[in-house]
Amino acid sequence: MRKEFLPFAKPLVSEEAIADVADSIRKGWMAMGPKTVDFENKFADYVGSKYAVSVNSATAGLHLAVMALIKPGDEVITTAMTFASTVNAIIFAGGKPVLVDIDPHTFNIDVKAIEKAITPKTKAIIPVHFAGRPCDMDALEALAEKYNLGIIEDSAHALGAQYKGKKIGAGRGKNHIAVFSFHPTKNITTGEGGMVCTDDEDAAEIMSMQRQNGMSKGAWNRYQANGKAHYDIFKPGLKYQMMDIQAAIGRDQLKHLEEFNTRRREIVARYQRELANVRGLILPPEIEEGNVHSWHIYTPLIDIDTLGFSRDDFMAQMSKHNIGTAYHYQALHLFTCYGEITGLKAGDLPNSEYVSERIVSLPLFPAMTDDDVTDVIEAIKEICGMKG
Ligand SMILES: Cc1ncc(COP(=O)(O)O)c(C=O)c1O
Image (cartoon, rainbow, N blue to C red; front, top):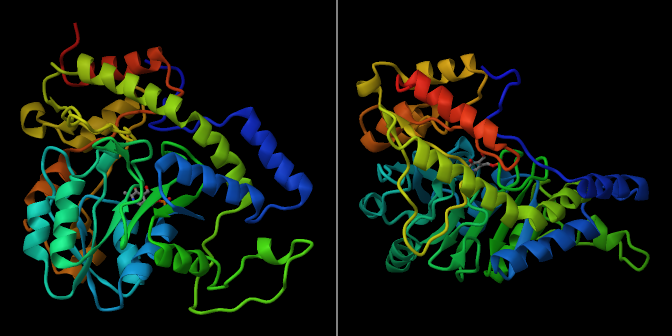
């Protein structure tokens, strides 16, 4: 039994990043400024997009992206296996969310189900790269072209992931946007924060303005020695921009991303190898050839029929071993409000419901030691009755 609680996720922030935050505070420029611009440029270079618009969360980024691509009353198709903010972004942009089922192996959106759900009102699709496993972008882009739809990749889990040799977030043309999250559990963090990447100049421009109340110029452009105080507003906006004290952390985190993701992959390789024969555990499939998984979360299924206990029982047992786990996600249509909004009920999206009842996220973060990983594996073997 571990003495110290092992959380399911924990950020790893360097002393350099902390010093850079202190520098912003001492200099007296904490809000969006030069460090934010620098982080955006570095991020765009890393993923390979023309534009990177920083925001104060992926939730904000998704909202801006949906507003940029649809009009109120339009339908937007997304997966039921995602976080609430994917769907909240559609709703708050005035759109109608249409939830479809997932592929039961990859947990990514089922492209065939999307095509069945398309109506003349459909204007965009939001695929989610679940856990950091890239969706089938070729199939999604073929659909988008056939029906003239925008694509917003919810890439909250997918920083560092690659689809057919191209990073998730790399520019994929007009009406195509990718949104990343820097929440502390994610592959890199800024505390709260996010980034919206696109090659679509019009979308980038409108999102840049709408993140700062619609203003054509931010404070950073206005308050410099030679800055001009006047600005215009073409469309109302929200207060969604990132601060320099966040970007100070983010630009340092980005330097460490590859090493963080390498460590994530090492831990996952041990889980895949050492949990392979554990009774009652269904492990994620290996990554498709030619793609790179970013392993934001590691999510086996608890085979409740074989084990005779529920996923929640499994999680409670893990807590008794002083090990944290998490739940990503309850299928969205099973929440009261999304059931009401979409008209979907239990039984309508069987794959999402099957996964939702069994899925659990095991501890996975770069600072996990080999002993931590051993503790998780040993605890699971004991819980599933395979010890010895
Ligand atoms: C799939 C998905 N989309 C969007 C978000 C929202 O990210 P943020 O917390 O940065 O708003 C999350 C966060 O957990 C997520 O997992």
